[in-house]
Amino acid sequence: MFPFIGANTLTAGIVTYDNGIFAYGISGGLESVSNLVSNTGVIATDTTGVGTARYGLSGCSYGEDKGIFAYGNTGVHVSVSNLVSNTGVVATDTTGVGTARTYITSCEFGSDLAIFGFGETSSKKGMTNLVSNTGVIATDTSAVGSAKTQMGACSFAGDQGIFAFGKDASNSLTSESNIVSNTGVVATDVTGVGTSRRLLAATEYGEDKGIFYNGNSSGGRTNVSNLVSNTGVIATDTTGVGTAREGPAGCTYGGDLGIFSYGHPGGDIAAYSNLVSNTGVIATDTSGVGTARYNVAGCSYN
Image 1 (cartoon, rainbow, N blue to C red):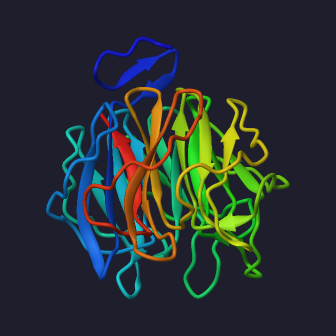
Image 2: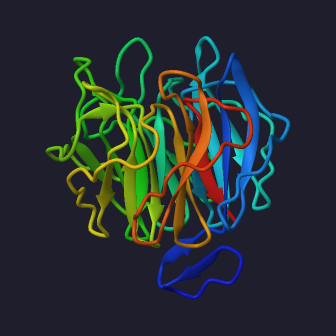
């Protein structure tokens, strides 16, 4: 493992993060509360919400030590964003840039940049929006991949990203993926591997790999996972661990670890979490902390 001393570290082009944050989502109503994740994977109690309460948004890291939440739905599609400082403080709304849409997803690339992509309005979308290393969202870029929504995304190899799974323009579940280069260019569709599903989550782990988890498949909610190698290859399904659910979120913490939390298992809305080791092994459920909700977003910082 690369050197890691209690905070964000950049070594050999790979940025590692110490802390994470989950925010927004749906409980009995729309939420704007957030919950910090410590460098040992402990989720804190609710922090009073800042910014517009909404669901179906996404979060990712940028600038090597900060984060951003953007887009979503308040009852209408919105494109507002909220920056997250390197101490985990969520800022008030920033006026939106790009097409307002819901069920968007995002990931880092190029070590300090980020990209939001895909999503839906009255139709599925294929456009993307780049995020600068100062947290500024750019206008729409036409994507190469086909229009999709309710996908997952994460980083790999330290400077690239990958979007995968979701629902396509014909409303069919898919497992195809699209790699994001270290300059933010989205590649054409790659034939899918693993169970086709939507409303899943993804996170980086092990400093240069990724993992997709949970979601809603043709057979209902699932707890299968799919590892992503440091060359962006998605593996076949790994037998599920933890509660099957849709609408969770994931983020990294502790330098090379990951965590998934929240989501909807089909009965009561969930607040429990599942840790991911630096070899990509998902742990059993941990009792939930904070407001139980789903269609939540997560990102890393510090």
